[in-house]
Figure (cartoon, rainbow, N blue to C red):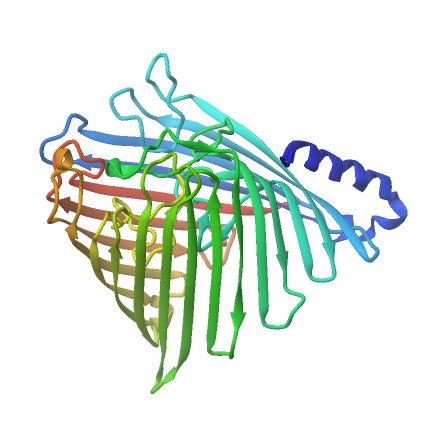
Length: 424
């Protein structure tokens, strides 16, 4: 079994052994930044519910220190990431937003929490191996950035672009750290609405795959993932972008095949998910329509706390991924740079899922859900506050599920103020 802590420490010692004579690239190509993230989260539940709201406000500090690589055919480097979250407002009745850890004894949110990530890295030609703290962003696993601090994993991640047009990736993970935690746990499956046994855990998540640019307009993808003794998954994807009239047309196909692996500790996994988006961009306008079908005996599995790579990605109150769900959406984006206001963008989206299959205790078959999202964001373009980013999001979510389901009717608001200061 891979010991990621020893791997990171070993990489650090090896770096020191290179000596200053070979450390030119290690220092000259290094980067440092500090991100300040202010996050207000307000999920106001409607209808019959035993919790009226999840509402918290917190300040995050994310320090990233990245070295270059030592000189020579094989280069070595070291990355450090320090993250700190500080409570600004919370109460025992409103915890559980994912911004702050909840203390087991008192049921209150922690006043602050922090963690340190260390990653040793090695490069040969256009191939890099990172060992230690990693944050994959792949179709089969996206480390979630959707709260105050990132979700992180322990393990190894190999990436190669040595073959023109082909990007290959593979990795081994054995622990995960959730967005509102400082402790690394075994890797678990997401289990909202009673889909799977969320207490089932694994010491091993393996992935392998890549993306190939068949032409300048068409990129094909394949990935395979396995959460040992719980589930395995295949992903096929295709993105096609080309000029059409005065604008640009984009097609995005995503196809997942999933079943249980080994003893299937989380229960039966049997799902096929196929989603398709069509988008057209003209000037500052972009219109996207799409849909997805989930079939089989279960919902599509994904890692707890991560972001599933779906046509409904980054929906605020649900992921529209219940068993047998039929999903469609309509989305409109506008970039105000087209009318002389660079940095200002807006988005409106409506999503609906029908034919939802739930356990009888949560409503049974034939259920439905819908969500309306509004977003407005602005990045300051010049002056002393250049690159300060402000983001306002609001969602209205409704479903026909039983009152004890994980997803419940709500009105949700998120406000973010982010600023990244380049240290060097």
